[in-house]
Image (tube, rainbow, N blue to C red):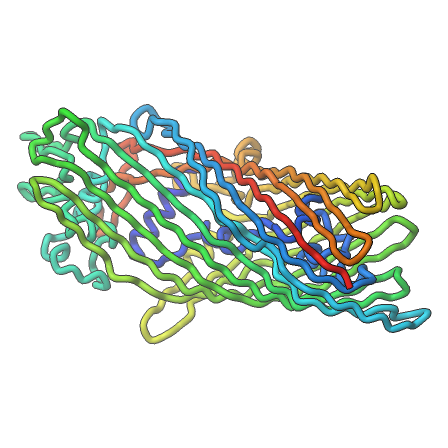
Length: 535
């Protein structure tokens, strides 16, 4: 996977700030559903179940199943646990476990049911407004260690190869012939300098033979924090025909709030003389995405025989407009001088068209004792597309990025299983399981060819979750549900920096220099409490 990451990073260098790559298509479009505690407790296998406000995300016909109106509110807690450590012999050797928690509101909503009092035909009409979380971005990675061969400062210096100090000093971040913004803040923040015509990091030394080497072992730190959520506000309409066939439609309004903050730093180790009184350096990048979009969804639930329900739904692509702000900061402390430089706060907007979604489900009710349910969902992320939101200030052609999406992304299959047991009319016990395949289908080999991932590599992308829940329903209108979900995420790998060489005015990754890699294993726990009233 490292070769794909390298290619992505190079494209970002070429485009300066604010450029999207193919992996952002998955980040914006993928769903990881929350909702009500009942829905989550049953593994979100709700396509054929209905009757619950959390089920409307999967099948709008679910509102027509209930014979009563209801209101729910669901506060929730997300706890992310990430264990990170370097995967190579040099760099980030410490094994660091980091926890991060966040409160939220995975669900709220109200549904009104109107009884037509018809003996046959249309029996009930339902209307609802419901908000359900469809993605929780809570995640924080931290890695530390020492390095004796490479350095972030040296990476920035290698990026400057082929550019004059006049360009670097000018500070025109929007110029037509400049290196990456990262290189610009690195130079102006004092992270590297020019010695005898060569760019050298402040942690490096220029030897008499012209070679540039790390002066001595240094301490390194890497941090990545992601936070925010994606929310779907549903305006729902449902119809009940003879309590045998249920039809529904949603107009969905998606809102996105995503923050991404990456920090890379290096520091002097005690007792080492670096020759320039080097103390520390840091590069911090941050971007914030706010977006909104629209889609429609239609679905049905049928009861062909007593106890059995069959459901299916299809969702149109979501047209989302995202506004992004981006900024970089570079700083250093050496030779008794503190230097720092911020890039401009870059702002721009773009459109994302997410793919169609289709899901089917089966549910079987076992008398008054409980029910079993199973769902399957299909989404092909290779058809996700970026489009420019044209204005007078910025223009970007997403042709290359969209081709990368077609080359690297592919279909995702999700299986959701759920069960509910009712030991008494007032009490319910629930359990659920999810298995979702990864959205990356191909990768780039050493010759630059797009080739399929192996079966083992596809398995490494699998995402699984188990959930448990309990519910209480009073003899009157009040009901309460609690659920907890444990999700195990695929391993991620981060290369904090590469070394580069310049050829023909273009920067390329220097694969002869082995730079550190951080491996991170994440788990996410969600706890939800739904408070509801029927009327």
